[in-house]
Length: 305
Ligand code: GLU
Image 1 (cartoon, rainbow, N blue to C red):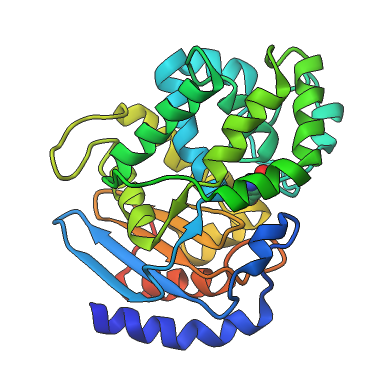
Image 2 (image 1 turned 135 degrees about the horizontal axis):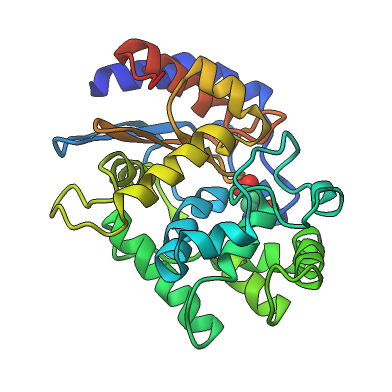
């Protein structure tokens, strides 16, 4: 398996030439566009890796799957989906347009920025610090990595430049999606996006979802099976930005990508996959990561459809 993964990394490396690293968060612009890595963590406990699998990157939008699980655990399904919808948008992840033109005014799903900011506002805790600590501990438990923490430079870089997210948050507060201090709510969101991971960490998160919200090592049920099902369904319908339909057809695996270059994928009952390549295509997905996932899916017949 490691040999095959090495081959897939080699075969897809040339794709990275056509991608671009995200620059709208200035600190992300420092990433090396040639990097490409992969990890497969299967249900039997095997870990297979290739390429730049141990390079650290920020989790960015992949974090939206995890904050959604904790928000549902904290508040229940009804509370969360009274405030955030379940439909794909067809717009960019940071688009503001539907907030105003769709009635009632609420974000269309928890995988776009507006929806994820609303979800982060629902994490329970007496202070911003406590809310983020609870979320970070949840990340650590699911990934099995006690050392997860934030990349301070990326966090501060987004905090300083994230005016579009800030404007969406003000808009949503005015529309009654949440109450409270916008900067504090955004702080939890910016911090969760800045959590540093490698391919193994996100493969394990994918495996946790593949295993129905149970830790594969101890079989401890951390999130209900229904919550894991909801998250995987969002990954299919909106996980790969506005290329989710194309990805479902070409790859057929529930997946969530982030502008840091990561893709976390989950093959139900079989495996979690973590891919990393910071060169992104024009939709914001790792161009090399998508290539590897497509090949992997064909090789092992992983499409769920
Ligand atoms: N922190 C990023 C933002 O809010 C996450 C975007 C992403 O990975 O899609 O813009």
